[in-house]
Image (cartoon, rainbow, N blue to C red; front, side, top):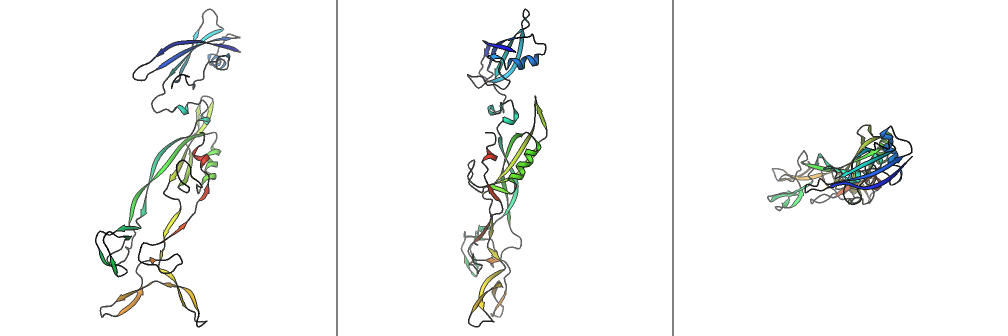
Length: 321
C-alpha cells in the first residue's frame, strides 16, 4: 500500500515556439520499501490521497499531457519516493482525444482517400446545330441530350469519363479478429438508411473492415482496424430507359376487334435512293416510356433499382465517440 501527497510545481517553462512544460512533484510513502520500481509506480498511481497521474493524463490548466514520470529517491528513508510528473504539448499530428491508456477506448479517427473509376456520359450539349439528329428534326446548338451523330445514331461504344469516388477511411482498435469479421458481416452489401455525418440517406456504401495486424501496447493486446466506406451521389442504380424492343398494342388474331400488348422490335423509316420509304430495324436502342412504349427523342427516362440493404450507420461512423 502507499499514500501520495501532492507537493506542488517543481518547474515550469514557456516559449514562443510552444515548447511549454510543467513538472509536478508527488511524494509517495510506501508501507514497505519498494525494490521493483515499475511496481512502485503502479502503487503510486493507485495510492490514497492524491495519486500520481497516469502516463496519458492531461494537465488541468492547459493543453498539456504527461510526457514522463521519473522517481527521486530519498537516501534517508527508502519508503519515500518523490515522483516528478512532466507535462508537455503533444507532438505534431497527435490528437488529444487519443490520449487514452486503453487503446480499445480511443475514438475512431477518420481520413479521406479516393478510388478511381469510370462512368458513362449519358447526355451532353452539341456545340453545332444538327439538322436531322433529333428523329429527323433539327437539334439546335447547345441542346442537352444523348450523344449521337448527325443521323441521330448513338456510337457503338459508350463514351466514358473518369470519376474519383471519395472513400472514408476510419482507424479504430478492436479486441479480436472476430470483431472485425463481425463488422464485415453486419455491413456487407448495405447503405445508410438515414442521414448521418452530414450525408443524406443512401449515399454511403460500406466497403470493408480489415485488420492491420496484432499489436501490443503496454499490457494491452489489440487489433487496429481500417474501415472503408464509399461516398456516392447515390447508391441507387439508375439506368437509362432505352432498349431494342418496346410494347405496342396490336390486333388480337384470335379475337377480332380486340387488341393485345405485344413486344415488338424497334423499327425506323428510311428513304431509299429512289425516294420510296422502307422500314428497318433500329440501329441503336431507342428511348422508352415508363410503361414500355416508345418514347420521344428527348433525354431518356430512367429506371431506378436498389440493391443494397438500408441499415443505420450511426454506430459505424461514431464508434468510440
